[in-house]
Length: 167
Ligand SMILES: Cc1ncc(COP(=O)(O)O)c(C=O)c1O
Image (cartoon, rainbow, N blue to C red; front, top):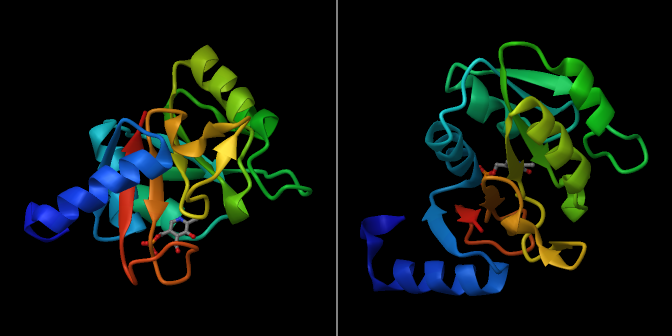
């Protein structure tokens, strides 16, 4: 976002408050936010993503030369199935990228358990989930970080925009 001027700083401060996270950095869109989060977490090799999401979830990884590995989803929720994630883990896996599709939280606790068991980094694509919660807790506080999109198609939009939130 342009030059870190006073309006950007106010925007980030208000996002932090609204999203209930400790830190929030505004970005030019959700795709770049995913790429920067991926780089910041030093992910490499393979990262597991849901087989049903917007293509940017996978593109952001591919552009960092990370292989997106597609795990099955739960047909009832359209979100990642944690057991399917477990089946896709290989020695090259470094992370899990959960997506809160349609604003419905993916199974955060079960994914956290898998990530801890295999020592994988867990982050979330919360592009659809601005202002949502999981178990009453703001969605952006789970995992290493959560990425939001403010594209014109989203509930809250800046025409183009995005952010990374961190608990
Ligand atoms: C699930 C999901 N991830 C990532 C993105 C990418 O966001 P943006 O369009 O802001 O780059 C979108 C946006 O449309 C999305 O729906």
